Length: 292
Image (cartoon, rainbow, N blue to C red; front, top):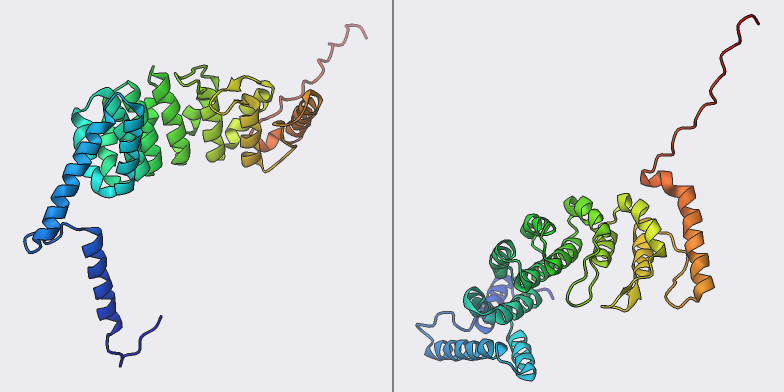
């Protein structure tokens, strides 16, 4: 929409009005000294949020889920109180708050989540790692990389996934080494599958050499009920742009054929992915016999 200079409301004035209207709608507690009604609404909302956070910690799953959904509907105004309870709540409550903060995607939560990631090794730290992936703040990359050395399987799993989501290329080598990690979380998630997915997001050409042998790995990842080689195929397709078909609905013979095609493709293209063929051995010449 365009406004001419002789219109009743100039373009600049119109824009200012829009900003003021949006501000009064989005931030109800602005100018509370002059707006008692807004202050009253803000106070009531704060009390409601506190009650909902308290209900997150009850022992009835239905009430917990209902409180969680209501907090997500209220949205960003819940963040300051969520951060406050994140410091003093019990393990289960803080775990849920980390998850909610990740879903709300508010940058105010980044520092608090990084602090939890650095100082805790239980499931709360794993939830913080997951949330940091959703928040897409690159300052989380160094602590997430450090978490890859944690003895806690849940934390390693969530940190790998978060680094992949953040497209943290500097973590590529450490994630690649996680292809050999045999860890399984309490929820049956395989560390190996998290690494495979992350390497696909990172477009890691260096990882192709290690991914090819995993095409024979039929271990089931119970989160999705898919075998490891399904993850491998998807990642190889992302990195190479090559496709030999899906093994998801294929029968055994078809699966074997697809894997053989990938093996043949690899033999033709491995030099493109940094694999240097061994030097050819020259035949050893026999020394000439004396007297001849």
